[in-house]
Amino acid sequence: MKVKIFTIIFLLLLVKLNVSGQAILLDKTTGQCISYAQIINDKGAVVGTTDIDGNLPQNLNDEDEIVTIQHIAYNPKSVKSSLLKKNTPIYLTPIEYQLNAVTVTAENREYIHLRTYFRSYQLNDSCMKYFRDGYLDFFINPKHKDVERLVIKVRNFQNDSLIDKDKKRANTLVDKYIYTPNLDGLTLMETLKKEGWKYNADSIDSRLRLNEMVGGAIRIDTIQKVLRVEYDVLATKGKKPKTLFGYTTRLENYYQTENYIYDSEYQSYMDLMNRKNYRKLFFSHKNDHKEQMIEIFDELYVQEHEYITKDEMKQYIKASKSNADTLQIEWNTDNTIVTPLAPQLEQILKNNLSQVE
View 1 (cartoon, rainbow, N blue to C red):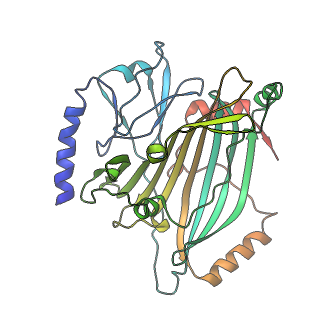
View 2 (view 1 turned 135 degrees about the vertical axis):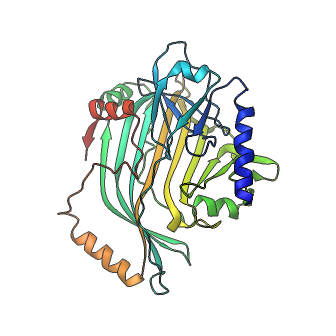
View 3 (view 1 turned 90 degrees about the vertical axis):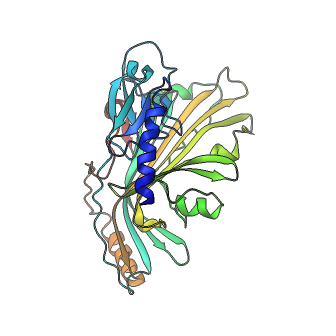
C-alpha cells in the first residue's frame, strides 16, 4: 500500500517538475526521472548528461541536429536537439529483460554463476578511439565474497588514424582506459549500504544520502520488478586533479548504474541484470596547450544466472578451458538483454575502427 501511495504522489509531482521550463527525461512506463543518461550528437560526441532529476542539458548548440539519448536500462531514442530546449518531457522505453528463472536448493547455493557480455569503449575529444567487448563468466562465493573470473572470448578494436595522430604529439603517454571488467565481492547496492548510505525503502523514488549529502537515487519499477541504483561517485570524493611525471589527470564525472531484479530489499549478484560506469576526465602534459577530454563507457550485461556447487564450478571451468580453441562465438547480441549502441557510435565502430589482436 505504501508503494502505491508513493507512486501517486510521485506522478503528481511530475506536473510540478514540468513547469520549470526545462525538458525532462522520463521512464515511459513509470513516469520516473532518468538520471545520468548521455546525449550523443550525429558525430558520435557526448554533448550532455541528464542530472539526478532527469533534467536535460540546455547548453547545446543552436543547430537543430538529430541526437540520441542512451541509458543502459532503456532503448536508445533519437530526437531533434531543439526538443531538448522545450518545456516538454521526453520518454524512453525500458528494456524488457528476459532472464531465466532459477531453481534454488540447499545443495546448490555454494556459488553464484553469471554468464555475461561486456563492452568498454573510449572517446578522445569526442572521437571513438578504443572499443573492447567479450564474454566472461563469474563465480561468486556469497559467503566469503570471493569472485573468480573466467574469460571466454574478447575482441579489441582501435582507431588507427587517431593513434597515429597522437604519436606525432611531443608528449605522449598510453591513454587507454578501457579494460576487461571484474566484479568486487559486493554489488554496488551492498557496497553503498556498507558505507553508510541511506534511502527510503518505502519509496519508489528515493535519494541516496550520506548524512546530509545527496549522492544518487534508488528507483523501483513496480511493473517490471526492477530496482535501479544511480550513484555519483564524486559526490563524496571531489574532483581534485592528480599529477605524475608532468601529466595531470582531472576526473570531471563518474557515474555508476546497476539494475537488479526486484524481489526484496536485498540485492545480491543473483539479482544483478546489468551495470554501467561512465567516466569523463581531462588529461594533459605540462607542455600541452590544452587538455584532452577522455570519456569511458564500461557496461556489463548478465545473460544467464544460476546457483551451482563447487564441484560443478570446477567441472565448468575445466571444460571451458579445454574447448577454448574450438569455441564458436556468436557476436550478435540479444537486444532483450544488451542495450543497443547509439546508431552514431555503431556506425563509427563499423567504419572507423579496425580489429586488432
